[in-house]
Length: 139
Image (tube, rainbow, N blue to C red; front, side, top):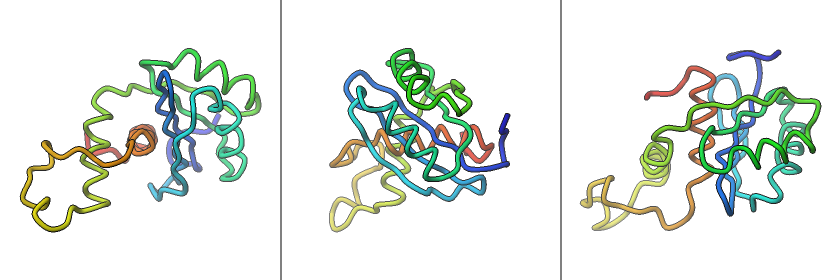
């Protein structure tokens, strides 16, 4: 079994309608991020794991995790599937989004907690999940 620090991981932030996904290297480099409809998460996770040589797929352990895990098991039987706590990942993903995409103009004056990203951030939540597993999170 692959453990923290030994190779890239794929993380999935599951949801009812869509899932955020990210491939993250052992050193924390974000290799790929995307958002897919929940029904396609299995194939997308299998393809992402193959593309980046990930032996483990992490799934957030809350809303939609059972369905996402089942779809991934069917499509990617050759990877280890593990659940990971996703408490507070949405808020952390919002903060991460603004760190990576700083606001411009007057929006800079609005506190981060009051700004809503202009696009879904499920993929950033998946990055947070991967960082937790790899021991790189600043929780």
